Structure formats: C-alpha cells, structure tokens
Image 1 (tube, rainbow, N blue to C red):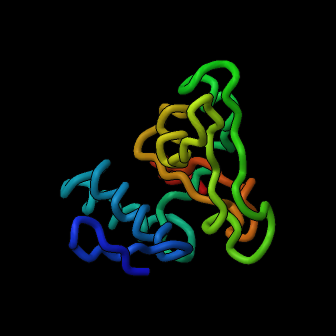
Image 2: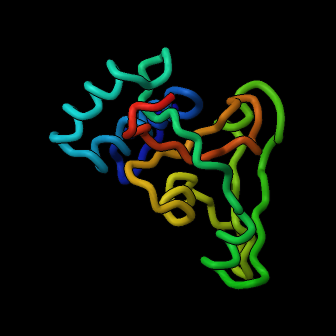
Length: 144
C-alpha cells in the first residue's frame, strides 16, 4: 500500500513481510554492528531451521495489564479484527481502550516492558492466531 504524507510517498507494509522487517529493525537497534557477528555465530550454532536465532520462548503477554499500566486501571485490551484466520496475528490489531478512544498496542513495546531479557523480539507463535503473541530471545547457552 502506498500512502502519502505531506506530499511525500511512503510505502506501508503489513503481514509477514512487516513482521520480518520489524525483527530486522529490532535486531539492528538492539545489537548494532557488533551484534551482527554474534547473530552469525548464533545462527550457525543453533537457532531454528529458518535461520532465526530467537528460539527461546519467554512466554505470552498480559495485554490487559499493559493497558492498565499505560492508560489507567479502567483500560483494557481490545482486538480489532479476527482472532483466528489466515494471517490473523499480522492483520488484526490490538488496542488499549481509553477514555479518549483506542490506542494501538505495539507488541515489541509490550515484550520490552514485560520481560527483562535482551535482545528480545515479539512475534506470534502462529501467524493464524491473533492471541499467540509471545516474547522470544536468543539461547545464549547453546541449549536447544
């Protein structure tokens, strides 16, 4: 999708491609150039068969707690879109309800706030389930 903002074109990416781009951006931000070398060794030493080094599942998110902490005790998480269906995790959006309307939830921010491990990446366990978002980190001990 192409959007225009202040007369400038901007490409908008959604779905699995957006998730892959998000993982790469998170890696670049969290690890910097020195991290690229670590990632290369982690991928060759372990990781999943897709080459993704983020294989340690830290667990899911408490979105209601995230919303309440961020916007007050009455705020709750609300799913906009189907909970289950083709690519639902990447096409449905989670929001926090607030007195001023809905506020979009950034799953990477939730992962960073609810888990202390670094580097960390938020991704769905199943792309067809919007309720399957989890935090993942790298197995630094070489265990699978």
